[in-house]
Length: 284
Image 1 (cartoon, rainbow, N blue to C red):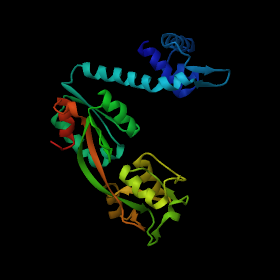
Image 2 (spheres, rainbow, N blue to C red; image 1 turned 180 degrees about the vertical axis):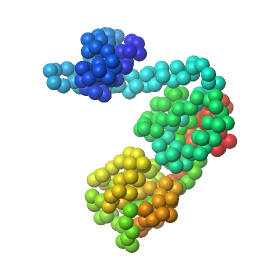
Image 3 (cartoon, one colour; image 1 turned 120 degrees about the vertical axis):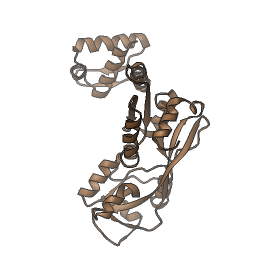
Image 4 (cartoon, rainbow, N blue to C red; image 1 turned 30 degrees about the vertical axis):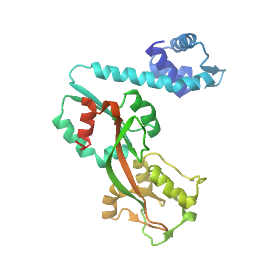
C-alpha cells in the first residue's frame, strides 16, 4: 500500500468514475486501475463494484474509506512537520464562522508576531469527525466546537458565549412558534448541542427541516437575499442588525445561549503547538 494507491482510491470513491478520476489525477485510466487493483490485493478485499455504467463502493470499500482519508491526512501533515523554513506548525479546526467572525483579527495578529509558524485551519469538516479522529490522532492540535460534551482524555476550555437569535431580512412583529419552523421559509442550521435541545423542545425530536444548511456564510447570504428566516449567533448578525439589513424576530420562548470551547488532548497540555493554539485564541 502506498500514497498513490490511496489517492486513486479516494478519487474514484468521490468521482465514481475511473476515467474522470484519471483526468483529475492527471494519469492514465490504466494507471488508476492498476493502483486500485494493487490496493485491493494488499488489503485482500474488493473495494469497488464495477459495471459498464456505474462504480460504487463495496462494503469493504465503505469501511476502508475513513481510514484511507485519515492516512492521507496524516501523510500530508507529516510533510508540513518536515518542511523547511518553518520553526513550528499549527493545525486547528472549527466551524468557518468561528474563524471569520470571532478570530479573524487574532489570526492576523498571530501571523505578524509568529511569522515562522506554519498555520493550517480546517473548517469544512464534520465537527464530530474533527474530534473523534483528527484531534485524537494528533492531526489537529486545538479544535473548537460548540457545546462539546466531556471526554476523559480531552480538555475543554471555554472561549466565548453567544446568544442565538432569529433573524430575517424583513421586519415583522409576529411571535414565531412551531408552525413557523415547519414552513418552507425557515432555514435551519445546527448551532451546537444546547441549541439543538432548546429547538427540539419547540418542534419535537422528529423534526425534519425543509431547508437545512451546514455553513453560516451560506445561511447568512440566503437570508439577506431571500424572504426566509433562520437562527444566527448575535455576534454574526449584529452588524447587519445595526444597518437594518437584518431584523431580529420574536420567538415564543427566550433565545438560547450557546458556548464555544477550545479542545486539546489532555496529555498534550504542555506541548508547544497546543500552547501556540491557545495563544492564538487569546486563552493564554
